[in-house]
Length: 78
Image 1 (cartoon, rainbow, N blue to C red):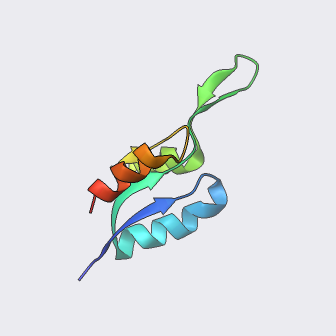
Image 2 (cartoon, one colour):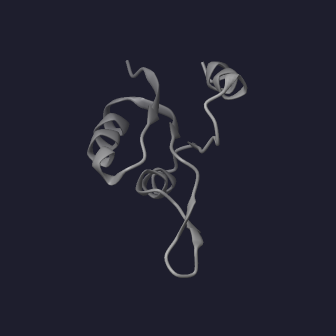
Image 3 (tube, rainbow, N blue to C red):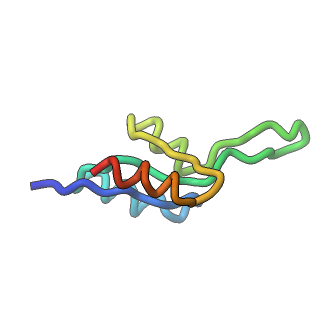
């Protein structure tokens, strides 16, 4: 039986781990850093983890702070 989990990561180095877990487990959500300005135009750019997770149809959470409110949101997921 697959068990639900919440993945936390941001860089492309965490993508192989996320991909393997997504094949073997029920990923309830992916937590990654908020989009940050990048390049000359300083346009907000998503993290590699966010791009991959959205492509795979996973729920993405990008909290500014890991505070009590956010922790309650995670607890509500199960």
